[in-house]
Figure 1: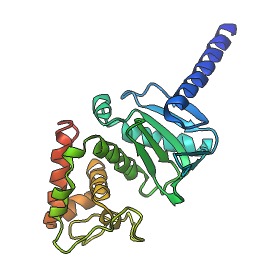
Figure 2: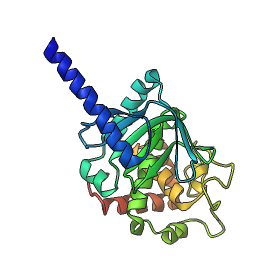
Figure 3: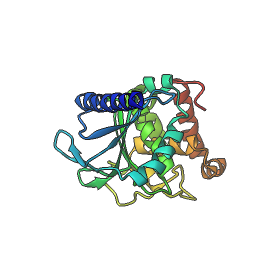
Length: 243
């Protein structure tokens, strides 16, 4: 019994020390170790308290409620387990932080990718209808930021019909719906129309989740088909086995 107690104390102290070490790296306070031994070497953390971070203190997220964490962590891990350690390393993703009600500059968001800190913050309270897909949407932003030469925005814009113009920024319009557009003329959701990188991320998320809606629409939508092929070909330059 005493031996088991010593082991428990050791691992408790180790987790605390590791969380403190991670704070020095990620600059996110009140982190708690969730999993350090995932097969693709992602290190998972959850938040014990609310936090405010960022150069201008504009990133806000709430602590994780344990009853919510248990279910959502399984979903997050299941979706991220499809990526190999080698793929994640190439795209600068090593740490995942789970919190609730994430916002940046007062605007709710599903996730915040940070290539420099190799970190993805995810809001586990995000709408469950889209939750699994937005995980991959945010992963794409890590891919995009790590390999900008593979995702030429000029080429991407050339796929769209001539008169189309993106909104200019991801928050410059109220048309940010994540539901499938049945006749999107090259777009899969309203949010796709905000900026090229969000358009790419939306399509990537549908590809990874093997959504039937994307497959059916692309059979009749030549522009959408071109975008799908562009994403697949670009990703294969990073990892030929991902699709």
